Image (cartoon, rainbow, N blue to C red; front, top):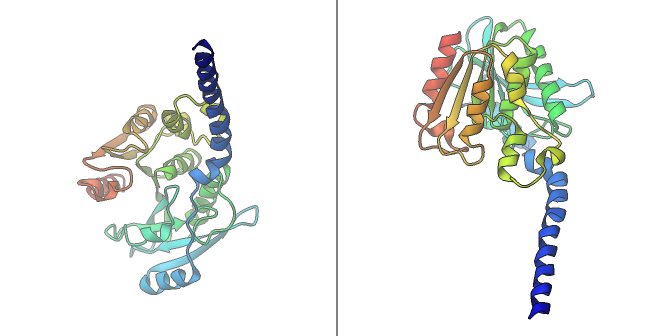
Length: 277
C-alpha cells in the first residue's frame, strides 16, 4: 500500500511540474497568434466596398520601414475642414466592417487603417509597430487640407484602446473614446492565468494605465456590463488613473463583442462628440 501511495504521489507531482513546463512555453510562443488574429480581405471585396460606398477614399500609407498600410477614409462631413475620428480596432477586427457604423455622425469623417497584417495592410503586427503606425497615421491626416487638425478624436476598441491611449500620449488630439478598455494587457492576462509568471512571459504589455496620468484630454469609456473577456474592473482601473475628464457609460446586458448593440451606446458617443466639438 505504501509503495502504491508513493507511486501515485510521484505521478501527481510529475503532472504538477509538467503542466507549467508545457503551458509556459506555449503561452510565450503562441501569444502573437492569440493577440493578433489578422483577418484578411480579398481584392474582390475591396472592389465591392468601393462600389457600395462612393464616399470612401482608399488609403495607402508607407511606413519608415517600407510597409504599406491600407484602409479607408470615409468623408462624412460637408465642411471644408472636417473633424476626424480615427478608429483602432480589436485584435480580430478587419476595419471595412466599420465603414457604415458611423454614418449617423455626419459632422465627423472617419479614418480606418488596418493594422499590419490585417486586411490588405502589409507586415507583421507588434506593440511597437501598432504604436508607431498610429502616430504616422495621425501625422499624415493632420496635415491634410480637408481635415481640421484641432478636432481629431481617437476611438479604440478592445486591443485598440491601448493604441488610442498611446496616440493621445504623443499627439494633441481632442479626446478619446475607449470601447471595452483595459488598464494593461499584462493585468488582463494575469487574471486569465493567475498562477503564471505573466510579467516574464508577456512580450506585449500595452500599459495604458502607466500613460493615463499624463493625458489631460477628455475620455469616454464604454464598458460592457457582463464583459468576461476584459472584465470591467480593468476599465475602472484605467479611469481612476486618467489625468483628464472622464465620461463613463456601462452598457447594460452586454458582453465584450456585442456592446455596440446595447442601450445607450451610440447615444453616449454622440453626446461625447457634441460636448467636445
